[in-house]
Image (cartoon, rainbow over all chains, first blue to last red; front, side):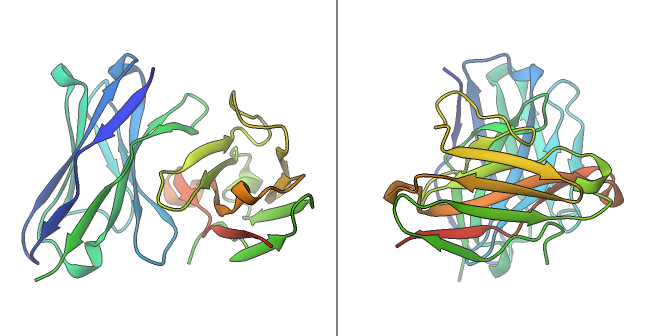
Length: 118
Length: 112
């Protein structure tokens, strides 16, 4: 069965970096794009961007350029989200999701809580 | 400020019907982009509820239905149940944002 399994919760100090992983199984990794979505406390879902799992080409939403990097390791069917120069406002749950050809996200990771605090 | 506007909250008694609106504009829903709906139960990841305006994935009860007209879309839930209490989000794309994904602000459904 299709699964996206994300890495565990992270507690980081301001200015540090974090790398969240999203390991896919149960399907051909390169056939479906991966979207990244943020859920900050008290806010709604926010699309961060997506990565083409065939070419590795990332696309970033407004507000998620510069400090955010999407990457892949296709040998282990894993997508990564790296955030540098962490700020308190980066505290959120980060989700990866598989995008269907219809553009709907049909499978989601369980989410990774990133807490930025000194 | 979300590109797609949803009511912050709706409520209904068990067995009742509720609808959640998703209002967009000529650059997103009105431009012909499809609308998808997600249900997020407390403490869990979002779950795809409706795709391509009015289609249910396998396993989603037919109590849930979607529609789209003009620059808006709606999610209807009939026979409301306690386990339907969750946050609901619409999703589409927007041509003024290079066709990027946009989410509605989310609607909290309370079952009274």
